[in-house]
Each structure stands twice: as C-alpha cells, then as structure tokens.
Image 1 (tube, protein in one colour):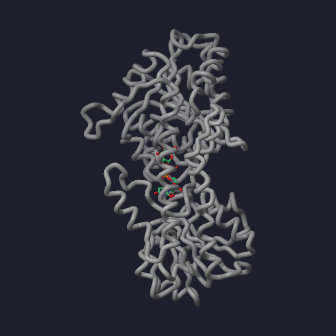
Image 2 (spheres, rainbow, N blue to C red; image 1 turned 90 degrees about the horizontal axis):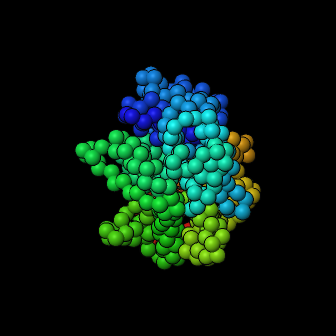
Image 3 (spheres, rainbow, N blue to C red; image 1 turned 180 degrees about the horizontal axis):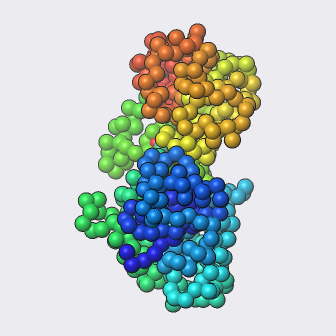
Length: 453
Ligand code: UGA
C-alpha cells in the first residue's frame, strides 16, 4: 500500500471502486460536490440501491478507511493517484457532455500547481476517444503550469461494472484496461491493480496496457456490441411475433449454446435502458460522424431500441382496440432488476405513450418508486405491491423482470381482475402457465393467439 488514492465522483463507478480499495486496506479520500451525497457516504449510507454496497460502505467508515469531502484540494494534496469517475451525460445533439470532466481537470490542475512531486491522474469516466489526451491533459497542464510526463502522469482506465452486480463486478473484473500516456503512468497504475487483484487470487484478472484512445474506444466498442446483441435479438423477436408458433426464447437458448455467440445479452424484450447504453450509443454515433464516418450498424442498434418499447403498446391495442380510459398495471419501473435506477428506463417511454393515449396507469416496483415519483410525478398511481397493482386492470405489462414477479400466477390475475390480460415485456413468464387461462401475449412470441398476430 505504497500509494494513497482519491476518487472524484461518488456515483456507481466511484463508490464501487472506492469500496474495493478500502476492503484492500487503503485509506481513501472520496470527493463529490453534492453535500447530501457526501453526508450519506460519511454516514455509511449508500445513495442508491446496489446489492452489498451499503454493508461495505459501513465497514469502510467504521474502519476509518473512507472519508468523503467536497474539498478536491485536500484530496489531491493528500494522495498520489486520483481517479475521475464523474458523469459524462449526452448533450441534446447526442454528443458527449464533458462539462464535469473539464471542471474537475481544471481543479486538479489548480491544485497540482501548489503540489510538489508527481501525481497520477486516471480517467475512469466513459469518454470519447481523444478526450484524455486532447481535453484533460491540456486543461491540467494549463492550470498547473506543469508538463504531463515528467510532472504528472495520465491514464485512461475504463470501467465495466454493471448495475445490480456492480460490487461483484468491481471486486472480480474480467479485465482491467490501462490506457497510458507514457510507460511510467501505466506502470504505476498496473502496480496498484496488481496489489488489488494479486496474481495468486483464484480469479486471475487480465490487465491490458494500451494507448489512451484505444482504452477509450474499448469501452464504446464493448457497450456498442452488447447493445447491438440486444437489438439483434429484438429484431428476431419482432419477426417471431409475425410467425405462428415461433418463440424467440427458444431461438436465443440455442444461439447461446454456440460458444462464438454466448447466451448473455440475448434477452429479448422492450429494449435496453439505463445510464450507459442509450447515452453511449448516441455519443458513439455522434463521435463517428465527427470523423466523417457513417456508423450504419450503431444507428440500426439505436433505431431498433427506440421503437422496441412501443411493441407492447401495439400488442395492447390489437387486443383492447382503443386504449382511452383503459386501466394499465405496470410491473417494474427501474431500467433493470436489482436497482432503483430510473435513468433511461423503458417504463417511462411506455407510461408516457399510455398517458398520451388517455389510459389510466398504476405502477409498482420493489425499489424504484421514489425515484419514479421524481421523474413521472403524480400522473400515475403507485401501488404498494404487485397484487395491488394488477387489481381491476384491463391490461398488465411486465416491464422489469424482478424475481418477485415470477411468483405471480394466472390465478392471481383471475382473482384480481375480471378479464385478465398480461403482456410479458421481458419474457419472464412461461407462456404455457398462462396461455389457456388468461389472455397472454409476450415479446417474441408468435403463437396464434398472441393478440391477433
Ligand atoms: C452496462 C454494461 O452491461 C456494462 O458492461 C457496462 O460497464 C455499463 O453498462 C457501463 O457502461 O457502465 P448496465 O447499464 O448497468 O451495464 O446494465 P445492463 O445489464 O447492461 O443492462 C442494460 C439494459 O439492457 C437494461 O435495460 C436491460 O434490461 C437491457 N437488457 C440487457 C436487455 O434488454 N436484454 C439483455 O439480454 C440484457
């Protein structure tokens, strides 16, 4: 533990990275500009729902390993390596918004002007190729009066954690990518990671060292591929819906047996949401255009996804004809299970459309209701349980595949509503358990009675 570490930005990536360091015995300085978040972290409370995070956070606070502050000066002056994990949202034209990165780079530069000795800056936020070298480096150099290389080091180290399993992913990454400005920067970061993920550990982590733009691009290439896999299987699902007795889940199961393909990200449904895929695909497309390259494939991935959420509305319309005044039960609001995150959630797209059609919407989610209230407000009703949610509905749409929804049976629907109609937007239910008992439809299910298809 020769190096002292600080992390700027206490979102998912920052906080999950922080607990990996503290669990490994590091004393870490965490920085955030949001005082409410700082207070939560210092009290060992996770600002968002993420399995195992709060327990590790509490441990870190109790062991005096973590302090969170808004004072970036203090963090830089008292540590040797600083990770940047601030958000990189999208601008309205789809391009990446680097405001937070630029602000932090400026502050780091200003502090480095006062600091003697070498400091390593590591960009962990997702940024388009060229950002670390052409945006972060000149800002730090200008504000510090120092030179990247001899005076301070610079790396780009993309993060691959997935919400819902973020802590596990942070502790056991498949790989660590280090984009380095120069050999010295890369070596320092590699040594740090060797300490965290030692050679002898049962899950040996592959550490790949490369150039800054390659590291930046690896992140987009990875997310772009995963998103494309989802849009591909959704394309197959949409074809299945037009063919009686075709079923996308059986197709995906067999495709997944092919080691070239693998079963992951072949879950057909209402499309991808979240804080990463939608913004990263758009930013990647805009970035390609800036290079005068037309990324046809990424555009198709995005276009399929933009339309996919409306698939369940079309199914509902075929069965109910007019949606005006019809009561809809929405099961699941979060963009995926095991999180309370509503960013980019498909639920908001579906609910917005239903409200435009004049429908009445009741929704339930095990974790995301308070975040949903902030985003959607009182235009819909929030139910305290799944059973309450489906009561008297004309149609229920399963939007997020939380485990607890799998317990729902056809009998539950028959008990709660006169003419039960269930649309499975995530292929959670077994069609044979519902088909003969209630009106059942699902994405990628081409049975004859899939609501007139
Ligand atoms: C994603 C990637 O999976 C991570 O590898 C990456 O590090 C992260 O983005 C990031 O860039 O930080 P995350 O957004 O947390 O992670 O969630 P995913 O599990 O990838 O799910 C994204 C969306 O795709 C969800 O709405 C999910 O429901 C949907 N999805 C996922 C499908 O529709 N089908 C699938 O088969 C898998």
